[in-house]
Amino acid sequence: MALSSYSELLGYARERKFTVGAFNSFNMESLQAVVSAADRTGSPLIVQTYHAHMDFAGADYMRALCETASRHAKVKVALGLDHGKTYEQAVRCIEAGYSGVMIDLSSEDYAVNVAETKRVAEAAHARGVSVEAEIGKIFDADATPEEIATGYTDPDLARRFVEETRVDCLAVSIGTAHGFYTHAPKVNFDLLEEILRVVPCPIVVHGGSYTPDADVLRMVKMGVAKFNVGGEFFAAYKKTILGLLTGDFNREATEVMAAARAAIEKVALAKLKLLNAYRI
Ligand SMILES: [Zn+2]
Image (tube, rainbow, N blue to C red):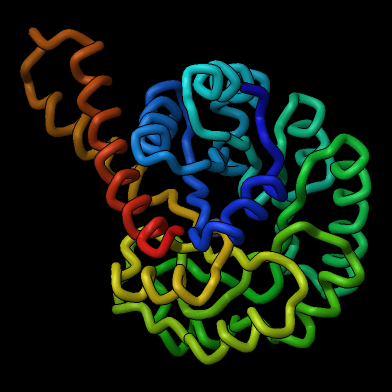
């Protein structure tokens, strides 16, 4: 099956009341793991490459791997760039055959974020590729809840941004953060509700790793469209490999990689269970 756009998957998820998992992968094993989990649970999936992994993985390699995985899977699969930093990086992914790109200039001035996001949206939409952008600041998870709150998304600004840029989905800051939390996260559900009410496009929550299951379920129920998970997969992969490499050189390399792949698949299955909890 050819790769799907974000818009197609997010529209379908809205009808069926589930949240699309957007799972990061950076090589063949991690991609096989997340697509296999999606296939086993009948969940359409967005596979993403983190911007800083792009040079390691290669956009054309990831596209080829994802297309192959998609051919083997029964579910629809999209391939996206996560936190793209420049117009040029987004265009490289579009030209390599990605079906979605995120352009994240949320740390720039509003006017720069609008202008660059608009340019990316025009280039992407001309090729049927979906675009995600970000308003507000999503912190790393070593920030305190108070620090995280300083980056909250302003709902009215978010609405204006979507109208001006015509993006297909928007990442917002509502209390989750990237990576391993050193303080328990505090999700601001009132803010999320307001954002869902006023912003005219699907809403994306980042920082899906280690966010408590009850919070994830509540966000799913409220109608979050896309839920990003990265760090928890990377940690499962590393932990498994490092655990198997303590002096036992008789193991086959394939055995080590297969175990790392299985560890990621297990995390992905647990996340997909939450994201599909209210599916009709
Ligand atoms: Zn993110």
